[in-house]
Image 1: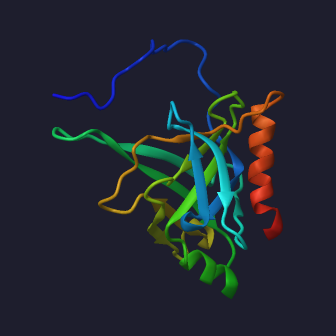
Image 2: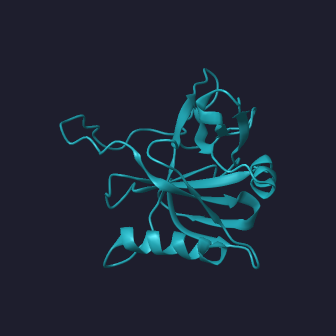
Length: 191
């Protein structure tokens, strides 16, 4: 049996848990507009993101805890384990352009920012390989304050190689600041 993956360091569970949660702004991109560069030695690490000419990314602005993100493992007895990615948010806007925009949520990449500001793992990218598409979209006029509840996930039958991709833009002074600056620059034209 050939080895696809094997562990390479100690796994620690101690009192140094990360701060739970994510910030209320996420970055959203059409996957086909992106060029994602992964680290040559650890392809969980994204070291650069570029947009195609004449394209831009956008922000999803949430409120309190109405956005969520994560993954689910797809365990296989006869193949390497893979993952599906997940992102959800609430859509408050009801005008025609907002409805058309949310109805078009297909083949996307989402970057979220953890509340924990570590050197590696503050910004998490979902949908790098297979993209994220609408998996659930619910609105009930008399429920949940008449707010549209949208879930995006890896399309059925597709998977991602890793549970998440950490966006870490190398910088001698602050990888956090460099990563945040890159993401903000990718969406600046949209604001």
